[in-house]
Structure formats: structure tokens, C-alpha cells
Length: 389
Image (cartoon, one colour):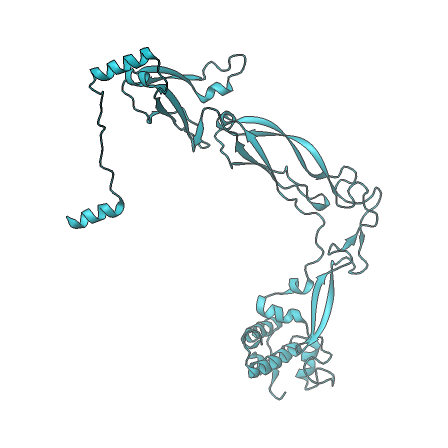
């Protein structure tokens, strides 16, 4: 190579190490074969890599400045030079001392996984809240070794293969020279230490499975699919690491009277046609009636309400009672929607039939013709009428 190494990197002869490294990074990003497949670019990359290899080493740089051979007669790029792959990685990712030092051993203690259990509650419990005791089966801290994973009186020892580093170097040769990479040590699985005598209770894991009882408070207003988080009550991590969280997913059991739609409650009341025609007043239970205990419960709870059915109420009519639905998680309360279904008798005795025929005669309904109402037009029908006008 006849070109001056300083000129190849585009730096002054008195440039310091940082300036040389910055110049190499800039040129490597431009000429590296992975980003520039041009053969001339590859040759250029070899030249600037050689220049950086020499000028980044104080001894080789001093030899070059004196006019000597920085490779001691070996000649050529990468011949016995031990060019490090981390220098190339530094050029692309801006690495420094941390990249050269590697990641080091990984800790045995790691956070545990989150756990999920499902809990079925009644509609009233979901609406007004409830406290439940749950039995959960999760990994807990080993009481014998207290998470260390070692037998009594023993401790982990440094790995003889990686000498506690948790990583071992692998060297490969390529056109770039020797490429050194770090991989997790197979002997210690990257921990940097080995447990010579594992705890018999947990087999060295630092945790065991156990069934325990937890108390969970379900807030008022939850719905099917709501998850209640219990921080730190999940699986204990390997090596006695911190526990994950436990999530309790709520499922609401069907209710014999009410169905839930959001924070609103719906129910259906069936009335005989005479009551719908004449009108009546009904006493119906509220959802609070489900939470009243044997002692009568809280006297301030509204366990029932009066529903006035106006004369002439039609089947399918809805009555909305404000504030008798489900409390919301963020405040407020939904409504109770009562749908009235008018029931027509299917069997009549002689006297009942006689009275109904008499009523029909009085109302001139002995031979009703029925009322045919025009159906509602569809979207395309309405658009056609709009254009016609």
C-alpha cells in the first residue's frame, strides 16, 4: 500500500485516538461490503481497515511514523494482526468499551411471570363489590434455601470454563482477519457460576410450587372480562427473583331476573291483557334485594320499587327507571329498563268467552278488519324518492 495511512482516513498526523476512531466509523459506514457491494468499495474498505488497525495501536503507529513496518515483516492486512470484530461493530453502532467488555454474567435472579385465574361472581357481587378468598397454585420462594438454590452450608462457585465472565470468546477467520465474538458459556449457562450442591427441595431453582389462600377485593361495577391486579402475588422468579403479578379475571354468572348491558339492567314483566288494558301497579325487586342478609340487611337499601302500568299499555313497551342499574367503576349508575309483555289467554271457559264476546260487541270489534300500515322504506327507496323530487 503506497498511500499514506493518515490520508486514507482523512486525519492529520497529530490526530488523537478519538479523531481516528470517528474517521474510521464514518468511512466504514460508507465502504463496508454489507452496505456497498461494489468491488472497488470492498478494496477501499480493506485499506481503511488496515489504516485504522495501525493508527489505533500506539506501538504500530509509532513504528509507522518512524518509517518502519508496523506488522514486523508479516506484511498484508490481517496477517497476525488480530483485528477485532468489535471495531467494525463500533463503526456501525457507536460501541465503545462496553462492547469490548461484553455483557458479563447474567443474574440468577429474574422476575417471575404473571399469573391469571378466573373468578365467577354473582351479578349483585359484581355490581356492589365483594371480598373473596381464592386458592392459587403458584411458584413461591423456597423456604429451605431462601431462593439461593444451594444446599445448606454451600454457595455457588465461579465457573472454571469462563472464569466467572459468563461468556466465552469464539474466533473465526475471514477476509477481515480474525473475528472474535462472545457467546454465553455452555458450562454455566451464562451465569458465571455453578451450584455444586443444589438444594434438594427446589433442585437449585430457588422456588417451589405451593397452594396458598389470598383475599381479593372485587370493586363495585366490574363486568365480565374485567381484570383485578394483585401486585407481587404471581409467580416468584428463578433464583428467588421478585414475583410477578396475579390477575383475577371476572366472569358474571347469569341472573334469574336481570340481564346486564353495560351499566344498564334489563328485565321483562308479563301482564295479563286485562291488567294492561285497565292499568295496575306492580311491586318489583331491585338488584339490592340479592345482597340483603338474613338479618334484614341495610335498611337504607332500596330492595323494591313500585312500577305503575298505565291503562292501555301495549306489549313491548319499555319503562326506564333512572339510577337503578349497575354502579360504574368511575362513578355514576346505570338505569333499569323494564319491558312489559302483554299475555293473551289461550284457554277460556264458557263464562270468560261470553264476557269477551260481549266486550267485543260493545267495542264493535266482533269482526275486526285489522290495520295495515305501510312499511318503512329502505335506504335505496329513500334515496330514489329524494332524486325524484
